[in-house]
Every structure is written in C-alpha cells, then in structure tokens.
Amino acid sequence: MFDDFDQSAKAAGLALSTSSSADQSAAARTVARHARDKDDLAQLLDVLGLPADETTLTDLFPLLPEHGDAPMTTHPTTAPAAGGPALSAYEAGALSMHADGASEQAIREATGLSEKELSDLIADKVLGLPRTGSSAAPMIDMPVVPLRGSDRLQRLIQWAATHPAASVRKRAARITADLTELSERLEGEAAQREAEEKVAKARAALEQAEKDLKAVKTGTRATTATAAAVAPTPIRTGTTYSRDELAAIRTWARAHGHPVADRGLPSRAVLDAYAAAHPAAPARKDG
Image 1 (cartoon, helix red, strand yellow):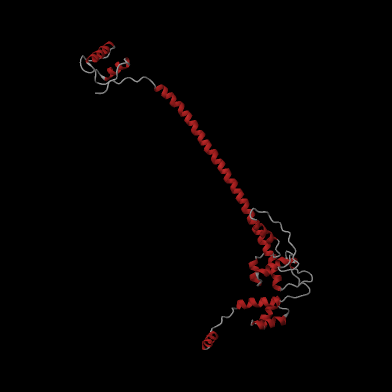
Image 2: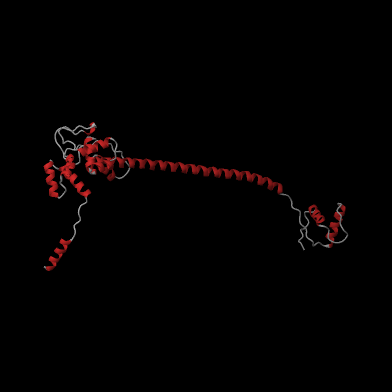
C-alpha cells in the first residue's frame, strides 16, 4: 500500500513536456478549420488548453468555414461549387498558389494545410473530383496501360486508377508510366543485345573466312616451294673407303679434270662429285 503512495508521489513529481508554439499553432489552425463560428472556436481552444487570446483568435478567424455567397477570387477555377461551403482564406490562397505553379510543399508550408487536405482541395476545386470519403464518388474513367506481369499487379493498378482520392490516382498514373518506360527499355535492350550477337557472329565468320583464304594462299606457295626443293640428294660419303675404291675415285677424278693427289683421301668436292655421278654407290659413314 505504501509502495503505491510512493509511486504516485514520484509520478506527480515528474516534469511534463509542454507543446511547442509551432505544435500549438498547428493544432489551433486545425481546430479553426472545424469550428462552426467564432464563439465555437473560442470555446474549443479553451477546452483544449490552447491559446485563445484576441490576437490568436484574430489570426484564426480567416480559417473558419463560412456558408453563403462564394468569395471573389482572381482565379475562376478556385470558385466553390454553388450551394457548397465557401473557401477559407488559407484554402483560397492555396488554390491561388497552385494556379501560379507553386509546389505542393510550398503551398503546405505557407497555408498550414496537411497533405490530405491540400490533395482533396485540389481534387474538388481544380479537377472537379469528389473529396475523399464522399458517398457519391463516381468511378473515374482513367485509361490504364496493360503491362506484362502478374494479375495481382494489374488488379492493384486498376484499383488505384479508379480510386476517389486524387493522390492515389496520381500515384497509379505515375507507376503505370514508370512500368511502361521500364518495359520499353527492357525490350529495347533485348533487341540491342540480339543485334550485337548477330554482329559478333558475322565478325567471327568473316575472320574465319579470312584465315581459310590465307591458309589456301600459303598452301599453294608451300606446294610450289616443296616441288622445287624435291631433288635427288647427293650421297654424303664418309672417310672409310677401301684401297680399290679410292683408286677408282682418283681414276675417275683425273678423267673428269678434277685435281687429285696420288695418295691419301681425295677432297670433299671430289667425293661429292663422284657420289653424284654414281648414285648407286653405297653410302659411307663418317669415320
């Protein structure tokens, strides 16, 4: 029991973090956009513990939704529908900035509108589409490019393309465009690879044909050279001869005008000449 008291005392002593002025301002703007009138706004701010001084209320009054005649604006596309709620000053400013080409981020920072509020505002006032959550939201006839892929992906894109929220439809269109671009790029690169393979095969065939032609030309020259080189090779005689053979060689050499000594081994020129003149003579081994 005493432990419970101690825990309660500790909890009571903890310092609570206070909201920043930016958070309070954002909360006050949200309350103002949903308040019925000025008195309702003051009571809501007081109940929520938000600043409700005269300066704050004066700054928030333009955010109060007003009913009745539509306010005059410089852009006809920002005019509200007949019988509908009039635009607040911040909504009118957001539409004016959108018509001038400002980015959504810049519009949100300047007006304090959330991404959903700005998307619904543009869809309702600029594109003429119902806001998110409308019970009478019609099906949007938006063309969907058929893509290669699973049925689940196609169903998902079809669902997003006909979604009542403009942001979802924009995302579906962006995804469809990206997938279409990727599909075309894939087909283009595949065709390029196929063409490159054909070129590589053609080059390889050309190189092989050039090699074959070169081989044919080289073979013709080699055949001619071989035919010219084929001739009876003189028998190389050695130095081992009998005495009768040496006498016959010297006799033949003198008869054919070759100088030769009476003794010893005749010169190599005489031996080669004798061997060429007598091809049937047995070959000699070098001694």
